[in-house]
Image (cartoon, rainbow, N blue to C red):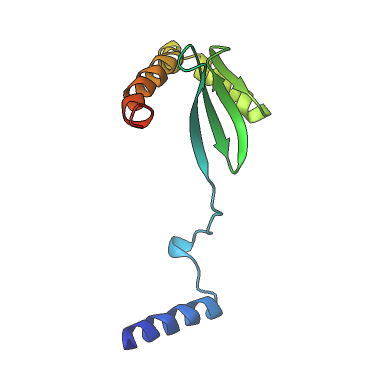
Length: 117
């Protein structure tokens, strides 16, 4: 228990005295970037829609929609990213094939989730 108190005292002393960050660099804020993929099933697997959302700091800046077939920008920065993603034909083709992966995964999980009743 003494070690915890000692470490806490050192931390408080460093904060109070305003110790500079490591290597004299300023600390940056916390930023979050994520991609969220969704498979929408309409009428079982008769119609499948794949949507991937690109999000930075809780703001969607670009998204891929399988109905459109390529990336669309939602912000000025997202338009730049969408042009970059769309300029890579193999990457866009991989995203277009995600509809087939959604169908395949749905058919695999149906045996365990739906027909199990």
